[in-house]
Image (cartoon, rainbow, N blue to C red):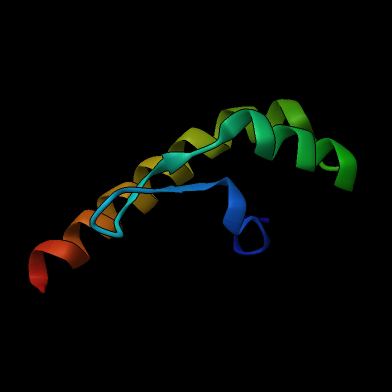
Length: 61
């Protein structure tokens, strides 16, 4: 779901991921027929992982 939701990924001024637009992703999940309560629990973990991974990549370059 996240790979098709580029518009819901917040990008900082240096190009790193700063977070996700969780309300927009939950609306998209509902439209696609996904389990919203489950995604409401899982997406914050995905957000943390994406932010941490993006930060790691930026410090390595």
